[in-house]
Length: 318
Image (cartoon, rainbow, N blue to C red):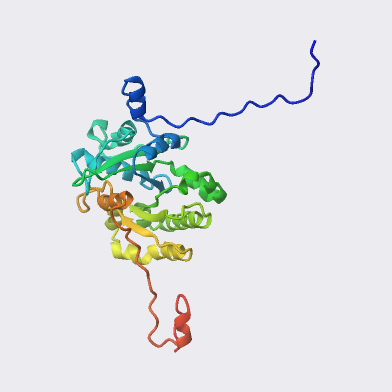
C-alpha cells in the first residue's frame, strides 16, 4: 500500500488558447463554408477580425439611456439604402445582433414610435462589426469594431473609479466616444446631474491613464433635436456647457473633439441621422476631428494689468 503524503498535488499546466481560426482558413481546411453566427462578438472574436483587415476600434461610453446603441444601429441602418458618406457596406459578422437592436425601431415591431433595445448589463458579448469599403475606391477597406456596452458598466466606474482598469481594451481603442444625452441637458431638473456625470467620466478616463497614446477622446451629443426643441441653440450649448468639459481635458493636455448628432429625431425640423456621416468619417479615419472651440473669457475694459493674468479675470475695481 502506498504511503500517504501531505504534499499538494501538482497543478496541471494551463494550455494557452489557440489562435482564432478565420472563416477562410476553415473553408480551405474542410471545404465547408462556415458562416458567422451573426451574434455580438467577444473580444477574442473581435481579435480575429483585426488580424484579417485594417480595422479601427471604437469604445462608446455613457450612462444607460444616453443613446449609445441608437447611434450604432443608426449607422448600420444608413447602409440599408446604399452607400453612406464616402463608404459602401462591405459586410458584417454581427448582422443578427444589429437586427435585434434595430427591431423595435422598425414598422414590423408594431410600435408607434421608434425604440432601441437596451443593452443587457450582464452581457459579455460587447462588440459589433461593420465592414466598410470606399464608395469610389474599392481598394480602400476598413472594418470598424464598435463596443455596445451597458450604461451600467460606466455607472459602476463612476461609483468606483478604480474599476476602470478592468476595461483593458481602452488602451487599444482608436476612439473613445463619451455620449451626452441632449434631452437631459435641455431639462433644467436633470441638466446639472448629466453635466456633472460627464465631467466625472471624462476626468476618470484622463486621470486613470487607461487610454492609449494615440486614442482620440471625443464628445458625442445625442438627441440634438430635443435640445433644440427646448429653445437651445447649438451656439448656446457650445458656449455654456462645452467649456466645463474641454477646459478640464486641456488641463490634462487633451483636446476633445465634438460631434452633434440626432440619430432618430422626433419631427421634421432636424434631418434623420443628423451628424452620423461626419461621425462615421471620423471613426473610419477619413477626416480630422472637429476640436471643440476654445473659450476665452472677456477682459473688462478697465481692468488693471495684473488682472489680465487671472482665470477667470476678476472684475475691475471702479
